[in-house]
Length: 224
Image (tube, rainbow, N blue to C red):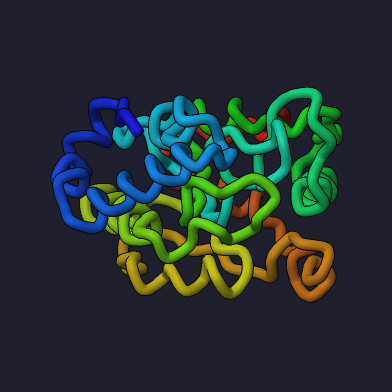
């Protein structure tokens, strides 16, 4: 796992790569590949969330749990899939909510959220790799420690960031965030199992843009 991390992120996270947990995580990933296991996303895309959304540009953080574990889906951004890949159920529901929340939003055929990332939306999964067809297979190997440090860095060194926390897993990360200087949006997860329990109608996208405008920041163009 050769690390090519965007320079402004490297300034705040470089010490993490020397720590024992990251050394053992790297050894674990090397060992998995030596056993010819298929790992998603491809190694060049593991840190896509950081590389597409520099630390200096982060305005919004959307926290997911795991990369998609199907072939051709994951590319390093939470909830996002590559072009020409069938939309996963959670992303379909995100688009449905956008259609009712943001005037003029048209549900796209692509699930590639790179356009959001380039506007300052950090699409961060807690775990950054997964074995093909084995959901959650790389949890508790060290990634969560690394991504928690990333969330803490945003909280500590930045001001007025919007954190969108969908579902219990993401909401547990609130403990890492200084709520006195950041804006938290919480609701049920967009998964089909929970979307009707408070995700639909929660208007996270318009609320995010209202908060950004109050700070004289450019709102997010959510149209993909």
